[in-house]
Image (cartoon, rainbow, N blue to C red):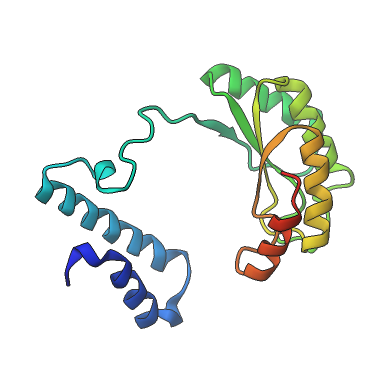
Amino acid sequence: EDPREIEEIEEDFAAEYYELQGTPLWIAFGHAEHAILDLLGKALGRPVARLFAGGVQRTEIPFYISSNRRGGDPAAEAAEIATRVAETGCAGAKFKVGRRMGRNRDAAPGWTSGITAAVRAALGDAAVLYADANGCYDPAHAIEVSRMLADHGVALFEEPCPGEERAMMVQATAGSAV
């Protein structure tokens, strides 16, 4: 197939393998897509970034510390995050809120509000904060949590609703304060 028709290739791929949807399938497709882009760049004698409208957008990429813990003592977790931020010199941190796929339940009583306030206090106002709910909330709860996150200057609220529930994600995003 013509590698310049990558969007059509992706659509055909998705239609052909629709019964196998999931992370393993799309990781494989992503690797194939990267290989196609690399071949196109080499054929044209250009870096891959120059194949896209706008070209190179940045030469440095900011990074952040990511914590996967839920529950326990928010202050202790925030202190651990602050230590890791200081050791690496990164500009921010991502932390978990809610319970993974938790149907509006918190990981522990007061965890979400506690970890949000504790991380902000530990890192200060200049740090960029990201919160990840791993699909914990329905849209109404996601919007409510987004307001609390916004009050603490959180820049991104990742996967507030189950990722496969597109309508829920659209609704939550439309009403989100973050």
